[in-house]
Length: 246
Image 1 (cartoon, rainbow, N blue to C red):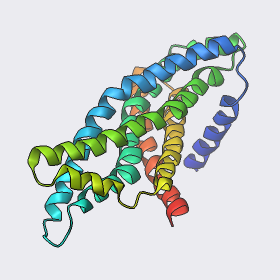
Image 2: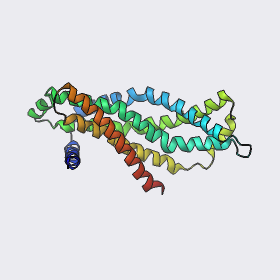
Image 3: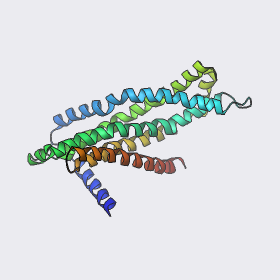
């Protein structure tokens, strides 16, 4: 029964989030700040992880396809499909859920326990719209670019790993990338990214907004928000794959 209560409160929260901002200038400033905090500050970790994970995927594929009858171009093809379909949109979103989700919960939760949110409500400001909507729009706007960059760096990391290790030729890898290219797979990855971005922004906001207690409660809420965001991303990943690829 407790889960049903949380689901209801979550959707009631969304109904208050998606209302017209009271002051567009203040909303625009908050939006740009969230783009920097939630997006630009995550560039480094996404670029680093994407490059090296792409290299690992290519090396493991090359080692498992060590057969003279299998063309080396299949390494690039398998790495491309793995990175575009799963690694970039799903794995990177889970990383962002940990980094960004804990930040969102702790920042909003701190405002709750220090009664700053109550002060906003007293002044007649829709606190959910003021605090959460810029985060939702910032993640939805910026994360497709972030994931696309992760795709590129992952594929480039695979090519670099092959060049350094000598397990496969760079030309064969590029041929494999170009082999049987399906633009819909990119659309599928972006659709997943948009859904995951929405979850990354709203689920931690929910846990932070309704936290009760002091600083210890904020820490527990941050942990719960990361766990539940990750669970919902995995479930949404399965549902979207079932809907779009089967």
